[in-house]
Image 1 (tube, one colour):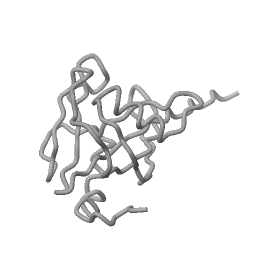
Image 2 (tube, rainbow, N blue to C red):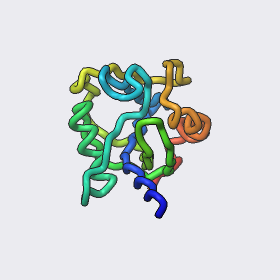
Image 3 (cartoon, rainbow, N blue to C red):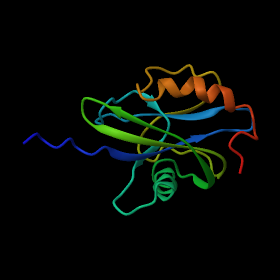
Length: 141
């Protein structure tokens, strides 16, 4: 009998876009896999939790931000050496608060993304994101 493949871990990921098109990236803290890598903020979806609720919870816990609304954008599965993840990306232009480093992580608003290294699953999304980040009507609804 073959070993069952582990189910991917669902992760809610938020892309906050400011009116000027800048997006928020966070740096993974020391002690976590890929520490020092930059990514869009988010975190694991708990059992029985809706993905959008996980997104809102993670942004409060990690950054002290309240997301008022977000549109589902895309989903990406990625297999890292330490985990198989299913990333659920949401775009939000509607939140309140200023980002705070509540888990000791660095963060940065980026126009043309210039921070490195980037988490591998993040890299392919940047080109897609470039097509919509300056269009306030993109994903409106």
